[in-house]
Length: 157
Image (tube, rainbow, N blue to C red; front, side, top):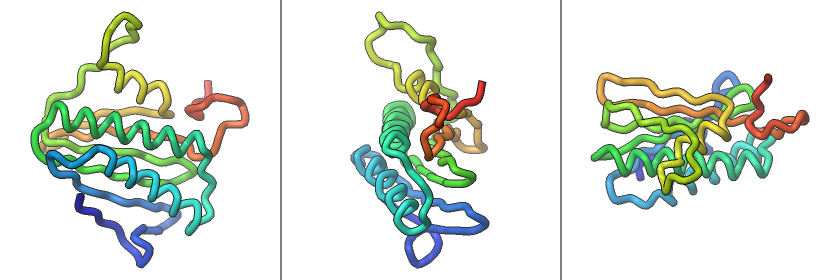
């Protein structure tokens, strides 16, 4: 894992934006990506005083795990994880070198496996796939503080 960020704390705080990025080579354990997310959100809370609910902590780790797992499974080569907090939410972005967009399958309780993106979309405030000149970026936004109205993804209907 190669990690980059600005500032003495390993985080960059510019105009209320806090971010961290890391590149993961082929064969590196997906647990390293989850550890990056957990450590980053712990620092966001401790160093910057931003609220991070237990739900948000576990949801971000789940989203990172699912997106990095897909990058490992469907794209050869390294992948890049970027975590950026702004406006009370965290955007999880994973880049990989395969330009083919993921197959987003509808819910099917009889299907074995391939529920990762379905889960990511269900727990995220927003979800997007962007083609890049090389590869693609997949982004999901998760609200950091629990919604008092009860929606775990923080969506407004």
